[in-house]
Length: 191
Ligand SMILES: C[S@@+](CC[C@H](N)C(=O)[O-])C[C@H]1O[C@@H](n2cnc3c(N)ncnc32)[C@H](O)[C@@H]1O
Image (cartoon, rainbow, N blue to C red; front, side, top):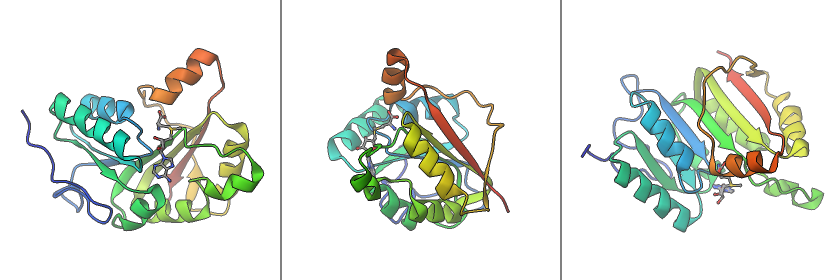
């Protein structure tokens, strides 16, 4: 079995996962039980994948999936998403995935949304030049709000050419089965 990466924490990536010699890094914020994370790590063994999730049972489920799969290029940290992003080093991530974040559709709850100015600010700092921030949601109102907020960050430019094939996430599978539309806001960090 491959050697597992050192345990990540809110202010520390696993050993060897940052710095100029490190493999490309993808971060999945709100990774749930790790379906997407583990599948991505399987598909791209030359890259590292870090899940961030604040619910401990889901973190344990993700950790178990990683261990069962024998993957050394996947790890998960139990943390609040914004707090975790604020702890990651500058220019350390190639891709940040935020896939079907909780939509908080009631106006009075909108401050609970993960994707707000402060999150984009942290993402801009953590992304490498040319890195991608992938925001995917089934909630049209949240997608529109993401676009409006992103317009305040000219270094995060809308990017329409993400041709990579991604495996479905847990929630995406449900939404596809229900025939719900999916909205993608893909932003590229400009140098
Ligand atoms: C709607 S689910 C989507 C899960 C997964 N990305 C998918 O597409 O199947 C949102 C996930 O994000 C987690 N989550 C919500 N807010 C979070 C936050 N602020 N920090 C970290 N995780 C969060 C939830 O516990 C849940 O697992």
